[in-house]
Image (tube, rainbow, N blue to C red; front, side):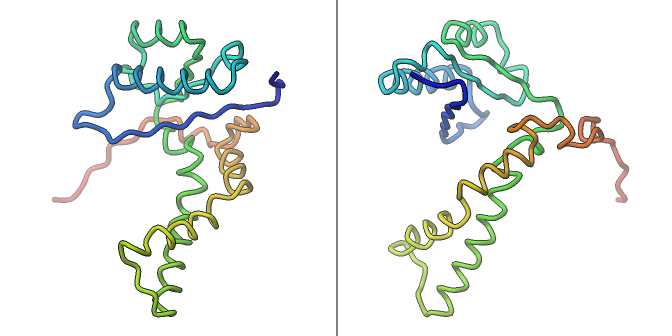
Length: 169
């Protein structure tokens, strides 16, 4: 049985076709993921799922919302103009991964260890292990204000539409 404090996070990625993800691709991917999770943990179906979306109108069609309701998926659309602020991995993990990867490349070069096809995974895994720590990931969620919930984490100005500024020709 699950406790109220448990959070289940399902991450899925797919190479985007030209034009992005379609509702059919998303629904089929979610169906496969939900079926897999259901086989692993029977009690998940009573809890339901939270799906965080960027709020684009293609995600809120009647078919997609009906699919979500049928599968106990709560859709949370993040506010416009805040996508870049509310993605924990973008906010607090990928920047660190970039710097640890650069350090790994520099260290390999100093040691005379060439990074090629046969050594890439080993070097990347080492950099990733340094960046993707529990503390880093939890800190990223905290920085976005998503967990724990902190509405003051993002300044009010971030919710305003972008201003058009003239450019010089």
